[in-house]
Length: 170
Image (cartoon, rainbow, N blue to C red; front, side):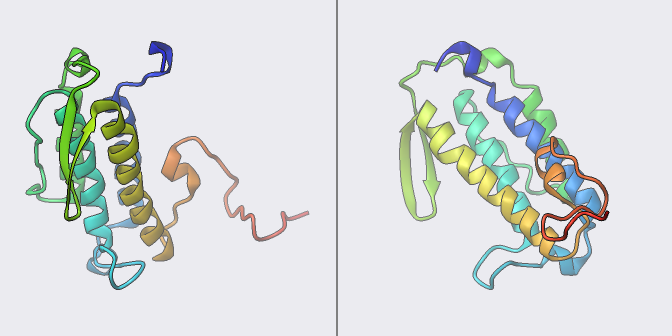
């Protein structure tokens, strides 16, 4: 990949964490929402949010040569996101200029993994971050939260009440 196509992982995660924070503002933190699940054997909404936040740290910290920070003890999900974003934004960009062949280690479920840095970020961390981010979005949406694709990616915009399933009003 050329330097023009590389994006600092902090940019990726902080932008999406800001979207996640805005979605939380719209979903509220009622106990029924925090405990809501898509399926009985999947993590509930609050844990999906925490897992997404955790993957941003589990990705950026090793790539920057730092121990993985943990803000899971924050008073709220919003505070956990805010603390994580502040921490990530304070990591100097040059910390990510490590040797290309460096190995990053983590635990994926019950499996220990050791991957070269680029594979670790692009094939493990980013997909897992967006998996949990997507599950939080899906749970909130299925719970009736007034959120849409624009809340997820920050780019899409639709007219109020728009639906792909209903024809547009004449």
